Image 1 (cartoon, one colour):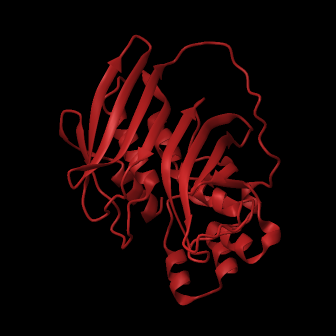
Image 2 (tube, one colour):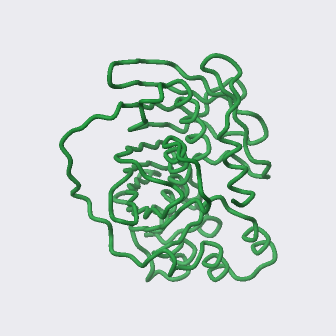
Length: 294
């Protein structure tokens, strides 16, 4: 287990400071705002700490309200909305500087037998081991600059293998523009068997590439297109057990963008083709010169 993954697992081990009140922190990085996937993952951990162990989260619906300040702790307040015979509902609010920066509703369900089908088909893509790492793709796309090499040399908690073009590659080569973005990912370590941990880690990783999928549809890239963006809301449905330390294919698409917003959808498949997670996110996309490239 590399140092980045160890730090992430430590960040997810929230401090309980009162009944249904938890405190989380952010990595010691010089960044402008807290990564949205981190807030969502920590909020889900806080909710899970208040739910009986026989119930597993099956859906979450979240809103990113304000940018998070990485320099100060985040307080997570959990509201026990409902404890029913089969379903449990929690509402979580993340607070910094006395204001809400994030809110989430999460629903937990006991295991029940029922009708079952899967119409979704995993896209036919190369095996992850045949694809270069994210670091290798970035070095090829942006060049071997000293600052970039230093950033890419840092360990990452998630091993990501892109099937399609990176936004930077599509920015430089318009023939690579696509509304689809398929990414293999896994946490490269043997993780504990706790099912909630694997769900939380999937929630963390789910926010990495959805906004990129909207950018890819327009041939835009961070730092190269006068573009700014942020996640607005995020919804996930967890269909079956899976492991985040085994390869998952994150098949994403952007069906629409407009009015300074973009929509992205994703499906996470196990390597055997089973649909494990469905994701939908709306994001803000603004271009400073007022012209959107398409």
